[in-house]
Length: 203
Image (cartoon, rainbow, N blue to C red; front, side, top):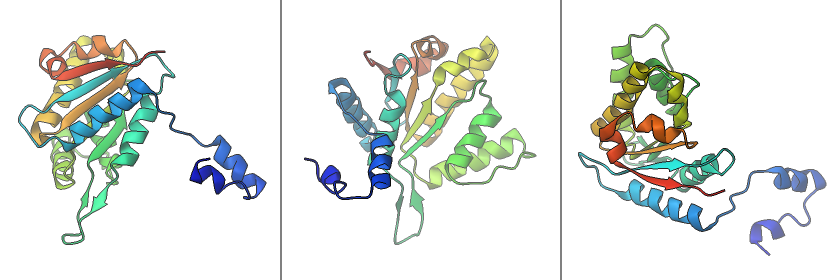
């Protein structure tokens, strides 16, 4: 019996019920290989053309659970000497119709920073990039990438160029997740799609 489960045997009913209802990571062969790949991205030194990964799969195949497991394995760490927090993995979920302002705002919120709704796009960009660099983000994760398809072709190109710009400026790896339609969305930027290896999660 797992130590965690053994510790719950004599716990009160409400504690055991809560534990039963909690999310659990259940690994399988393909998922473990994906995690190994993600770990390698996190350990990859900064480079002008960082490697990346696109993970596709039908809804409910565990893509988001993979990201949560990856984030738990690489939590933020505070440098005791400088007092600065390093965030090796930063993940956001693209909204139903993503824009540059929304993505910068989501990144700021994920870093625990406030968002000034009156700020110009340039102000948001400068502040976001500064914080991302200060936090030494090594992997940027974008979930629900298929939501790009809600925009017109020009809007899609703008967001794909933004993702590539973030990766280039930070010298950090990109991880994109979504249903199979996400492949069509990413294919809109040839340079981006070429640097992303592809893995499909089976049913």
